[in-house]
Length: 121
Image (cartoon, rainbow, N blue to C red):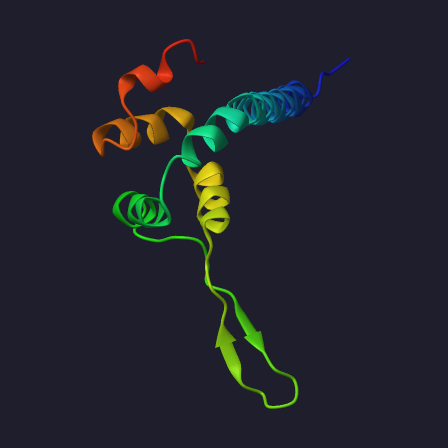
């Protein structure tokens, strides 16, 4: 009997693909867990920022903030830029930054003092 030389390689390729998919799934699950573990702490800290401080953090660290949204009046076709609120920036920053980055920025800009983080995760 002759063995098919490609057969072993095909199984190795399948195993490699399955292993890679498993690795990616694990990375996503870990990132999701960290995101949800940090969520309350991020929000609590960001609530101490003023709107201007939130805007400055976005611009200085990312060069952008949350997308501006517009409203178009269907009768006049006039397009109006909608205002951006503190919550818009908080949600944007929560999605874009890890807690440690927000903490470091808050300390560097003296938004809070180090004592703020004592007895907190």
